[in-house]
Figure 1 (cartoon, one colour):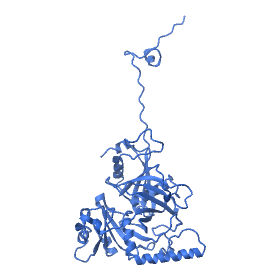
Figure 2: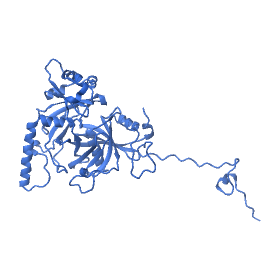
Figure 3: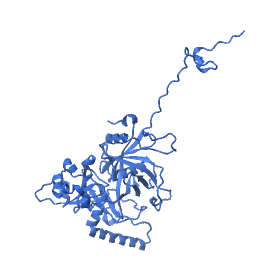
Length: 425
Protein backbone atom coordinates (compact mmCIF):
# COMPACT_ATOMS: atom_id res chain seq x y z
CA UNK A 1 0.00 0.00 0.00
CA UNK A 2 1.37 3.44 -1.00
CA UNK A 3 1.91 5.89 1.81
CA UNK A 4 1.83 9.65 1.24
CA UNK A 5 4.93 11.40 2.49
CA UNK A 6 4.12 14.44 4.63
CA UNK A 7 5.47 17.68 3.25
CA UNK A 8 8.91 18.67 4.37
CA UNK A 9 9.44 21.82 6.40
CA UNK A 10 11.08 23.64 3.54
CA UNK A 11 7.99 23.00 1.39
CA UNK A 12 5.37 24.17 3.88
CA UNK A 13 5.38 27.81 2.87
CA UNK A 14 4.41 26.79 -0.65
CA UNK A 15 1.65 24.29 0.14
CA UNK A 16 -1.82 24.55 1.61
CA UNK A 17 -3.26 23.85 4.16
CA UNK A 18 0.08 23.90 5.91
CA UNK A 19 0.59 27.54 7.00
CA UNK A 20 4.01 28.67 8.25
CA UNK A 21 4.71 28.11 11.93
CA UNK A 22 7.27 29.55 14.36
CA UNK A 23 9.34 26.44 13.92
CA UNK A 24 9.18 26.73 10.17
CA UNK A 25 9.15 30.43 9.21
CA UNK A 26 8.34 31.30 5.60
CA UNK A 27 11.19 31.58 3.20
CA UNK A 28 11.85 35.17 2.22
CA UNK A 29 12.19 35.93 -1.44
CA UNK A 30 15.61 37.20 -2.45
CA UNK A 31 15.54 40.98 -2.83
CA UNK A 32 16.10 42.06 -6.39
CA UNK A 33 18.48 44.94 -6.98
CA UNK A 34 16.81 48.15 -8.17
CA UNK A 35 16.95 48.68 -11.90
CA UNK A 36 19.98 50.65 -12.98
CA UNK A 37 19.21 54.25 -13.91
CA UNK A 38 19.63 55.13 -17.54
CA UNK A 39 22.60 57.40 -18.21
CA UNK A 40 21.79 61.00 -19.10
CA UNK A 41 23.22 62.17 -22.45
CA UNK A 42 25.07 65.44 -22.86
CA UNK A 43 26.56 67.41 -25.74
CA UNK A 44 29.20 70.14 -25.62
CA UNK A 45 28.87 72.80 -28.30
CA UNK A 46 31.03 75.74 -29.38
CA UNK A 47 28.72 78.63 -30.28
CA UNK A 48 29.25 81.72 -32.47
CA UNK A 49 31.89 79.92 -34.50
CA UNK A 50 32.30 77.06 -36.97
CA UNK A 51 35.77 76.19 -35.69
CA UNK A 52 36.09 73.88 -32.72
CA UNK A 53 37.72 75.32 -29.61
CA UNK A 54 36.67 78.83 -30.62
CA UNK A 55 33.60 80.83 -29.74
CA UNK A 56 31.81 80.15 -26.46
CA UNK A 57 31.56 76.55 -25.21
CA UNK A 58 28.45 75.28 -23.47
CA UNK A 59 27.35 71.91 -22.18
CA UNK A 60 23.81 70.76 -22.93
CA UNK A 61 22.28 68.06 -20.72
CA UNK A 62 19.28 66.35 -22.36
CA UNK A 63 17.07 65.38 -19.44
CA UNK A 64 14.17 62.93 -19.45
CA UNK A 65 12.69 60.34 -17.12
CA UNK A 66 16.17 58.83 -16.70
CA UNK A 67 17.27 61.83 -14.63
CA UNK A 68 16.66 61.95 -10.86
CA UNK A 69 13.08 62.97 -10.16
CA UNK A 70 12.08 65.35 -7.34
CA UNK A 71 9.58 64.47 -4.58
CA UNK A 72 6.67 66.02 -6.48
CA UNK A 73 7.02 63.44 -9.25
CA UNK A 74 4.12 60.97 -8.97
CA UNK A 75 3.87 57.45 -10.41
CA UNK A 76 0.39 58.22 -11.79
CA UNK A 77 1.60 61.20 -13.85
CA UNK A 78 0.47 60.99 -17.49
CA UNK A 79 2.97 59.46 -19.90
CA UNK A 80 5.49 62.01 -21.12
CA UNK A 81 5.31 64.13 -17.97
CA UNK A 82 8.73 65.16 -16.72
CA UNK A 83 9.81 67.15 -13.69
CA UNK A 84 12.96 69.13 -13.03
CA UNK A 85 15.54 67.18 -11.02
CA UNK A 86 16.66 68.59 -7.67
CA UNK A 87 18.59 71.85 -7.89
CA UNK A 88 21.60 70.14 -6.28
CA UNK A 89 21.77 67.77 -9.26
CA UNK A 90 21.78 70.62 -11.77
CA UNK A 91 24.35 72.63 -9.82
CA UNK A 92 26.72 69.69 -9.34
CA UNK A 93 26.62 68.75 -13.01
CA UNK A 94 27.41 72.35 -13.96
CA UNK A 95 30.34 72.39 -11.53
CA UNK A 96 31.61 69.14 -13.03
CA UNK A 97 31.61 70.54 -16.56
CA UNK A 98 33.22 73.78 -15.33
CA UNK A 99 32.22 75.63 -18.51
CA UNK A 100 30.89 79.16 -18.50
CA UNK A 101 27.33 77.82 -18.86
CA UNK A 102 25.58 74.46 -18.72
CA UNK A 103 22.09 74.28 -20.21
CA UNK A 104 19.55 71.71 -19.01
CA UNK A 105 16.77 70.81 -21.43
CA UNK A 106 13.57 69.09 -20.37
CA UNK A 107 10.68 68.00 -22.64
CA UNK A 108 7.41 69.82 -21.99
CA UNK A 109 3.82 69.00 -22.88
CA UNK A 110 2.73 72.64 -22.89
CA UNK A 111 1.49 73.52 -26.42
CA UNK A 112 3.15 76.28 -28.40
CA UNK A 113 1.18 79.36 -29.40
CA UNK A 114 0.20 79.68 -33.04
CA UNK A 115 2.29 82.82 -33.57
CA UNK A 116 5.41 80.78 -32.82
CA UNK A 117 4.83 78.59 -35.87
CA UNK A 118 7.00 79.53 -38.86
CA UNK A 119 5.04 80.50 -41.93
CA UNK A 120 6.62 77.89 -44.20
CA UNK A 121 6.71 75.00 -41.70
CA UNK A 122 4.49 72.17 -42.97
CA UNK A 123 5.54 69.70 -40.27
CA UNK A 124 3.28 70.99 -37.50
CA UNK A 125 3.87 73.08 -34.40
CA UNK A 126 7.39 73.90 -33.17
CA UNK A 127 9.00 71.63 -30.64
CA UNK A 128 8.75 72.92 -27.06
CA UNK A 129 11.22 72.34 -24.23
CA UNK A 130 11.92 73.86 -20.85
CA UNK A 131 15.43 75.18 -20.24
CA UNK A 132 17.56 76.32 -17.31
CA UNK A 133 21.16 77.55 -17.19
CA UNK A 134 23.82 77.17 -14.50
CA UNK A 135 27.32 78.64 -14.34
CA UNK A 136 30.51 76.80 -13.44
CA UNK A 137 30.12 77.69 -9.76
CA UNK A 138 26.60 76.24 -9.62
CA UNK A 139 24.73 79.56 -9.79
CA UNK A 140 21.53 79.72 -11.85
CA UNK A 141 21.15 82.64 -14.29
CA UNK A 142 17.98 84.19 -15.69
CA UNK A 143 19.06 84.27 -19.35
CA UNK A 144 21.85 82.79 -21.47
CA UNK A 145 21.87 83.40 -25.20
CA UNK A 146 24.73 81.14 -26.27
CA UNK A 147 23.47 78.36 -23.98
CA UNK A 148 20.08 78.52 -25.69
CA UNK A 149 21.63 78.36 -29.16
CA UNK A 150 23.75 75.43 -27.99
CA UNK A 151 20.65 73.64 -26.68
CA UNK A 152 18.83 74.01 -30.00
CA UNK A 153 21.91 72.86 -31.89
CA UNK A 154 22.22 69.79 -29.64
CA UNK A 155 18.57 68.85 -30.24
CA UNK A 156 19.03 69.17 -34.00
CA UNK A 157 22.41 67.43 -34.05
CA UNK A 158 21.20 64.43 -32.02
CA UNK A 159 18.11 64.15 -34.24
CA UNK A 160 15.74 64.59 -31.30
CA UNK A 161 14.26 67.43 -33.35
CA UNK A 162 14.21 67.71 -37.11
CA UNK A 163 16.73 70.22 -38.41
CA UNK A 164 13.95 72.09 -40.21
CA UNK A 165 11.87 72.61 -37.06
CA UNK A 166 11.73 75.68 -34.88
CA UNK A 167 12.47 75.09 -31.18
CA UNK A 168 10.73 77.11 -28.46
CA UNK A 169 12.29 77.09 -25.01
CA UNK A 170 10.17 77.84 -21.94
CA UNK A 171 12.13 79.75 -19.29
CA UNK A 172 11.31 80.61 -15.71
CA UNK A 173 12.19 84.31 -15.89
CA UNK A 174 12.86 85.31 -19.53
CA UNK A 175 9.64 84.16 -21.22
CA UNK A 176 9.67 81.98 -24.33
CA UNK A 177 12.82 81.91 -26.48
CA UNK A 178 12.40 80.93 -30.12
CA UNK A 179 15.34 79.46 -32.08
CA UNK A 180 15.01 79.21 -35.87
CA UNK A 181 17.31 77.15 -38.12
CA UNK A 182 18.53 79.52 -40.82
CA UNK A 183 19.42 78.03 -44.18
CA UNK A 184 21.44 74.90 -44.83
CA UNK A 185 23.86 72.92 -42.72
CA UNK A 186 27.49 72.15 -43.43
CA UNK A 187 28.81 68.77 -42.52
CA UNK A 188 27.74 67.13 -39.29
CA UNK A 189 25.99 69.56 -36.98
CA UNK A 190 27.32 72.86 -38.32
CA UNK A 191 25.05 75.70 -39.39
CA UNK A 192 23.45 79.00 -38.69
CA UNK A 193 20.61 79.58 -36.24
CA UNK A 194 18.72 82.62 -35.02
CA UNK A 195 17.43 83.26 -31.51
CA UNK A 196 14.91 85.92 -30.53
CA UNK A 197 15.82 87.60 -27.23
CA UNK A 198 14.06 90.38 -25.30
CA UNK A 199 15.41 93.84 -26.08
CA UNK A 200 16.96 95.46 -23.01
CA UNK A 201 18.57 98.81 -23.75
CA UNK A 202 20.91 100.29 -21.11
CA UNK A 203 19.96 103.53 -19.36
CA UNK A 204 21.65 105.59 -16.67
CA UNK A 205 18.50 105.56 -14.55
CA UNK A 206 18.77 101.80 -14.01
CA UNK A 207 22.10 102.23 -12.25
CA UNK A 208 20.14 103.46 -9.25
CA UNK A 209 22.17 103.38 -6.04
CA UNK A 210 25.20 102.05 -7.96
CA UNK A 211 25.50 105.24 -10.04
CA UNK A 212 28.22 106.76 -7.82
CA UNK A 213 30.45 103.68 -7.84
CA UNK A 214 29.94 103.13 -11.59
CA UNK A 215 31.40 106.43 -12.79
CA UNK A 216 33.96 106.61 -15.58
CA UNK A 217 36.94 106.68 -13.21
CA UNK A 218 35.80 103.56 -11.33
CA UNK A 219 35.19 101.64 -14.56
CA UNK A 220 38.55 102.74 -15.98
CA UNK A 221 40.35 101.59 -12.85
CA UNK A 222 38.45 98.27 -12.80
CA UNK A 223 39.57 97.62 -16.39
CA UNK A 224 43.22 98.19 -15.48
CA UNK A 225 43.49 101.18 -17.82
CA UNK A 226 45.55 104.28 -16.96
CA UNK A 227 43.83 107.13 -15.13
CA UNK A 228 46.11 109.85 -16.54
CA UNK A 229 43.43 111.23 -18.83
CA UNK A 230 44.67 109.49 -21.97
CA UNK A 231 41.90 106.89 -21.83
CA UNK A 232 38.33 107.96 -22.47
CA UNK A 233 35.59 105.79 -20.99
CA UNK A 234 31.89 106.67 -21.10
CA UNK A 235 29.38 104.82 -18.93
CA UNK A 236 26.27 104.15 -21.03
CA UNK A 237 24.11 102.74 -18.25
CA UNK A 238 22.60 99.46 -17.08
CA UNK A 239 19.83 97.33 -18.56
CA UNK A 240 17.11 95.17 -17.04
CA UNK A 241 19.31 92.08 -17.17
CA UNK A 242 21.73 93.81 -14.80
CA UNK A 243 24.64 94.43 -17.17
CA UNK A 244 26.54 97.72 -16.97
CA UNK A 245 27.66 99.07 -20.36
CA UNK A 246 30.70 101.27 -20.99
CA UNK A 247 31.93 102.76 -24.27
CA UNK A 248 35.65 102.82 -25.07
CA UNK A 249 37.32 104.95 -27.70
CA UNK A 250 38.88 102.30 -29.96
CA UNK A 251 39.61 98.61 -30.47
CA UNK A 252 43.18 98.92 -29.21
CA UNK A 253 42.00 100.20 -25.83
CA UNK A 254 39.29 97.55 -25.60
CA UNK A 255 41.72 94.72 -26.22
CA UNK A 256 44.36 96.18 -23.90
CA UNK A 257 42.01 96.12 -20.89
CA UNK A 258 43.21 93.83 -18.07
CA UNK A 259 40.23 93.76 -15.73
CA UNK A 260 40.40 93.22 -11.98
CA UNK A 261 37.61 90.86 -11.00
CA UNK A 262 37.19 92.25 -7.49
CA UNK A 263 36.84 95.80 -8.76
CA UNK A 264 34.33 94.79 -11.44
CA UNK A 265 32.31 92.82 -8.88
CA UNK A 266 32.16 95.95 -6.72
CA UNK A 267 30.40 97.81 -9.56
CA UNK A 268 27.33 95.69 -8.86
CA UNK A 269 24.86 94.14 -11.27
CA UNK A 270 25.36 90.95 -13.25
CA UNK A 271 28.44 92.02 -15.20
CA UNK A 272 30.28 94.69 -17.16
CA UNK A 273 30.09 95.01 -20.96
CA UNK A 274 32.68 97.20 -22.69
CA UNK A 275 32.26 98.04 -26.34
CA UNK A 276 33.60 100.22 -29.14
CA UNK A 277 33.08 100.82 -32.83
CA UNK A 278 35.07 98.49 -35.10
CA UNK A 279 37.03 100.76 -37.40
CA UNK A 280 39.74 98.23 -38.29
CA UNK A 281 38.96 95.15 -40.34
CA UNK A 282 39.69 91.96 -38.39
CA UNK A 283 40.44 89.63 -41.31
CA UNK A 284 39.63 89.01 -44.94
CA UNK A 285 36.33 87.24 -44.17
CA UNK A 286 34.45 89.47 -41.74
CA UNK A 287 34.17 93.21 -41.36
CA UNK A 288 32.59 93.77 -37.93
CA UNK A 289 30.60 96.88 -37.05
CA UNK A 290 31.36 96.85 -33.31
CA UNK A 291 33.39 94.94 -30.75
CA UNK A 292 32.73 94.02 -27.13
CA UNK A 293 33.95 92.11 -24.08
CA UNK A 294 31.98 90.81 -21.10
CA UNK A 295 33.12 90.34 -17.49
CA UNK A 296 30.84 88.69 -14.93
CA UNK A 297 32.63 87.84 -11.68
CA UNK A 298 29.38 88.19 -9.75
CA UNK A 299 28.04 85.12 -11.59
CA UNK A 300 31.30 83.19 -11.53
CA UNK A 301 32.62 84.25 -14.96
CA UNK A 302 35.78 86.35 -15.03
CA UNK A 303 35.49 86.84 -18.80
CA UNK A 304 32.94 85.21 -21.07
CA UNK A 305 34.20 84.18 -24.54
CA UNK A 306 31.02 85.30 -26.37
CA UNK A 307 27.89 86.48 -24.56
CA UNK A 308 24.61 86.13 -26.44
CA UNK A 309 22.53 87.93 -23.81
CA UNK A 310 24.87 90.96 -23.96
CA UNK A 311 23.51 91.67 -27.44
CA UNK A 312 20.15 92.47 -25.82
CA UNK A 313 21.72 95.79 -24.85
CA UNK A 314 24.43 96.11 -27.50
CA UNK A 315 22.05 95.83 -30.45
CA UNK A 316 19.74 98.76 -29.57
CA UNK A 317 22.70 100.95 -28.61
CA UNK A 318 24.68 100.39 -31.81
CA UNK A 319 21.63 100.57 -34.07
CA UNK A 320 21.15 104.08 -32.73
CA UNK A 321 24.84 105.03 -32.61
CA UNK A 322 25.47 103.72 -36.15
CA UNK A 323 22.32 105.22 -37.59
CA UNK A 324 24.06 106.37 -40.77
CA UNK A 325 25.46 102.88 -41.41
CA UNK A 326 22.09 101.30 -40.66
CA UNK A 327 20.41 103.65 -43.15
CA UNK A 328 22.96 102.68 -45.81
CA UNK A 329 22.32 98.97 -45.21
CA UNK A 330 18.57 99.56 -45.29
CA UNK A 331 18.84 101.30 -48.65
CA UNK A 332 21.03 98.47 -49.98
CA UNK A 333 18.49 95.90 -48.81
CA UNK A 334 15.67 97.77 -50.53
CA UNK A 335 17.64 97.90 -53.77
CA UNK A 336 18.33 94.17 -53.60
CA UNK A 337 14.67 93.42 -52.89
CA UNK A 338 13.58 95.53 -55.83
CA UNK A 339 16.11 93.81 -58.10
CA UNK A 340 14.86 90.37 -57.05
CA UNK A 341 11.26 91.33 -57.62
CA UNK A 342 12.13 92.69 -61.03
CA UNK A 343 13.93 89.47 -61.90
CA UNK A 344 11.01 87.38 -60.70
CA UNK A 345 12.94 85.95 -57.75
CA UNK A 346 10.90 84.29 -55.02
CA UNK A 347 11.51 83.89 -51.30
CA UNK A 348 12.60 86.23 -48.53
CA UNK A 349 15.40 88.73 -48.72
CA UNK A 350 18.69 87.12 -47.79
CA UNK A 351 22.00 88.48 -46.57
CA UNK A 352 23.67 91.00 -48.82
CA UNK A 353 26.62 89.63 -50.75
CA UNK A 354 28.35 93.03 -50.84
CA UNK A 355 28.91 92.86 -47.09
CA UNK A 356 30.90 89.62 -47.47
CA UNK A 357 32.90 89.57 -50.72
CA UNK A 358 34.15 86.04 -50.10
CA UNK A 359 30.60 84.68 -49.91
CA UNK A 360 30.68 84.01 -46.17
CA UNK A 361 27.64 84.58 -43.98
CA UNK A 362 29.56 86.88 -41.69
CA UNK A 363 30.16 84.46 -38.84
CA UNK A 364 32.95 82.38 -40.27
CA UNK A 365 31.01 79.82 -42.31
CA UNK A 366 30.65 79.48 -46.06
CA UNK A 367 27.68 80.86 -47.90
CA UNK A 368 24.58 78.79 -47.20
CA UNK A 369 20.98 79.01 -48.31
CA UNK A 370 19.63 81.81 -46.16
CA UNK A 371 15.96 81.37 -47.07
CA UNK A 372 14.61 81.36 -43.51
CA UNK A 373 11.04 81.29 -42.16
CA UNK A 374 11.40 84.86 -40.91
CA UNK A 375 11.76 88.12 -42.80
CA UNK A 376 15.22 89.63 -42.81
CA UNK A 377 15.92 92.92 -41.05
CA UNK A 378 19.00 95.09 -41.41
CA UNK A 379 21.81 93.45 -39.45
CA UNK A 380 24.99 94.57 -37.75
CA UNK A 381 27.96 92.30 -37.09
CA UNK A 382 29.42 92.14 -33.61
CA UNK A 383 32.72 90.58 -32.61
CA UNK A 384 33.52 89.66 -29.00
CA UNK A 385 37.25 90.13 -28.59
CA UNK A 386 37.96 87.47 -26.00
CA UNK A 387 40.82 84.97 -26.22
CA UNK A 388 38.58 82.50 -28.09
CA UNK A 389 36.62 85.18 -29.97
CA UNK A 390 33.36 84.86 -31.86
CA UNK A 391 30.99 86.63 -34.26
CA UNK A 392 27.25 87.26 -34.19
CA UNK A 393 24.82 89.06 -36.46
CA UNK A 394 22.20 91.13 -34.66
CA UNK A 395 19.06 93.00 -35.65
CA UNK A 396 16.32 94.86 -33.80
CA UNK A 397 12.71 93.85 -34.37
CA UNK A 398 10.36 95.88 -32.16
CA UNK A 399 10.92 94.80 -28.57
CA UNK A 400 13.02 91.81 -29.60
CA UNK A 401 16.65 91.35 -30.63
CA UNK A 402 17.48 88.68 -33.18
CA UNK A 403 20.90 87.14 -32.70
CA UNK A 404 22.36 84.78 -35.31
CA UNK A 405 25.39 82.59 -34.92
CA UNK A 406 26.93 79.33 -36.01
CA UNK A 407 27.60 76.34 -33.75
CA UNK A 408 29.57 73.12 -33.90
CA UNK A 409 29.49 69.98 -31.75
CA UNK A 410 32.71 69.13 -29.90
CA UNK A 411 31.90 66.21 -27.57
CA UNK A 412 29.06 63.84 -26.71
CA UNK A 413 28.73 61.48 -23.77
CA UNK A 414 26.66 60.32 -20.80
CA UNK A 415 26.43 61.15 -17.12
CA UNK A 416 26.49 58.17 -14.72
CA UNK A 417 26.25 57.66 -10.95
CA UNK A 418 23.20 59.87 -10.62
CA UNK A 419 22.59 59.08 -6.96
CA UNK A 420 25.88 60.46 -5.72
CA UNK A 421 25.82 63.47 -8.01
CA UNK A 422 22.57 64.72 -6.46
CA UNK A 423 24.25 65.02 -3.08
CA UNK A 424 25.64 68.44 -2.25
CA UNK A 425 29.44 68.58 -2.26
